[in-house]
Image (cartoon, rainbow, N blue to C red; front, side, top):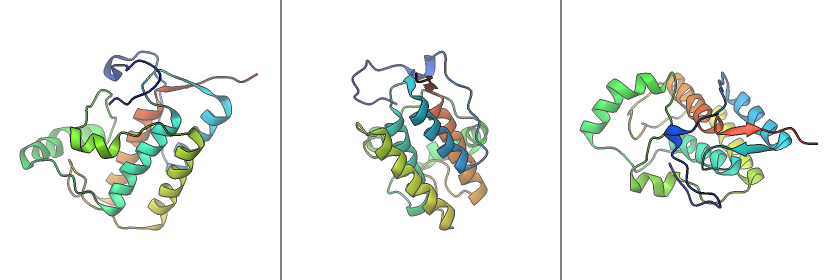
Length: 167
């Protein structure tokens, strides 16, 4: 996925030097993001921490509130049978969102603190509200599947940010 930034667009499927990130809870996502704010970071992808946090928040909020987006049935059938089991284990970089979905999901320039604040707000909602709507590609999912997908999604995006030591 791409966005307008000050740096040239990177083909994310071919990026080398990403971090190996694995989360087992939503709190670990926030701890990682907090750590990146504290240490500073270098991007090997296209998005800043603020943009990543905003994108993750938008995706999770769609899981709670639903979305008007839905892939055509043949695409969903393939996604449910072949991509969903893989995505629940590990997401691959380089997926390009359809234009209509990208308009909602690809964040513009977002301050790191503002994006992180938005993600904190949505994760609090995620923890306190039990409603989960169907996914645009994967259809109905259990709460555990939604949690797992959200963790894998965060791992994918945050792997493009490399912590730097300050001082």
